[in-house]
Length: 157
Image 1 (cartoon, rainbow, N blue to C red):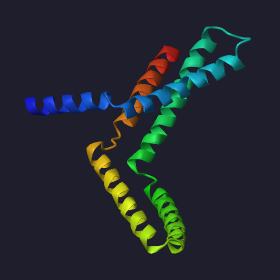
Image 2 (image 1 turned 90 degrees about the vertical axis):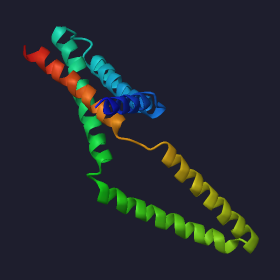
Image 3 (image 1 turned 135 degrees about the vertical axis):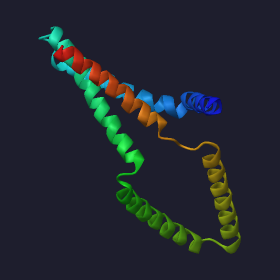
C-alpha cells in the first residue's frame, strides 16, 4: 500500500511539474477570462450583483464544457474520424515525398532517407521518454466542474 502511494505521489509530482500541464491549463484559464471580459463588456452599463455572479458562473460552465469536449476527444471517442484524417494526410505526404524522390539523384535519395530514418528514431525515443497523458485534460475538467458546482450552489442558495 505504501509503495502504491509513493508511486502515485511521484507520478502526480511528475505530471504537475510538466510544461505541457501548465500550458494546457493556461489555455483554459485564458478562455475563462476572455469570456468573463466579453460578458463584462456586453453588460457593463447594467452592472449589479446578479450580473457579477453571471459574469463568473457562465464562463466557468462554458469552460467546463470546452474542457469536457477536449477530454472526450482525447479519450478517443472520435477516433475513426481522426484516424481517417491522419491516413489521408499521410497519403498526401507520401505522394508528395515520392514526387520529390523521383527528382533526386541516387546519392541524394540515400542521404535523404537516412536523415528521415534518424529523425523517426529520435521521435520514437522522445515519445518513449515523455509520454503524453490525459492528466491535464482530466484536471482542467475537474477544476471547472467544481467551480461550476460552486456557482450553481451560490446562485440557487
